[in-house]
Length: 105
Image 1 (cartoon, rainbow, N blue to C red):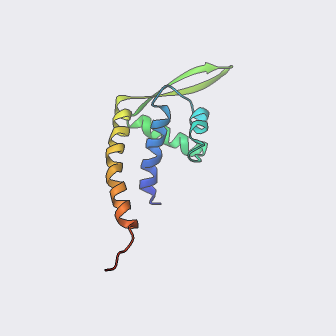
Image 2 (cartoon, helix red, strand yellow):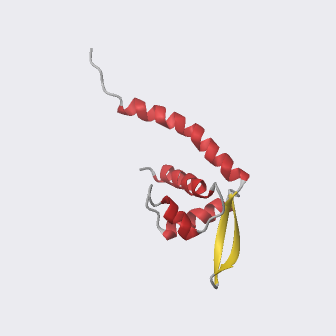
Image 3 (tube, rainbow, N blue to C red):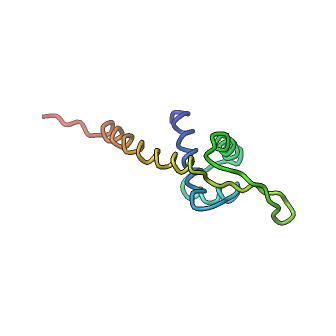
């Protein structure tokens, strides 16, 4: 798969994983696991990129004696998910064209 396409897809997946409420790294990976495998290093790279793009906010809080980062989606992150849904309709049409059966008459 094209690296840029995969990167964009993973960004949206991470946003979708936190769209219903604040979450943290391990929980994000756990929530995504039934759908795709994501390493911690990949996740934290994505989270930093999304934070820099103002698509999520981060707060740090103590949990069981350790500091944990909690991530929350922003309006820009929600907008990115909505844009993705619209863009994906076009991707589906392209896919259908590419995989269609050749018909010979």
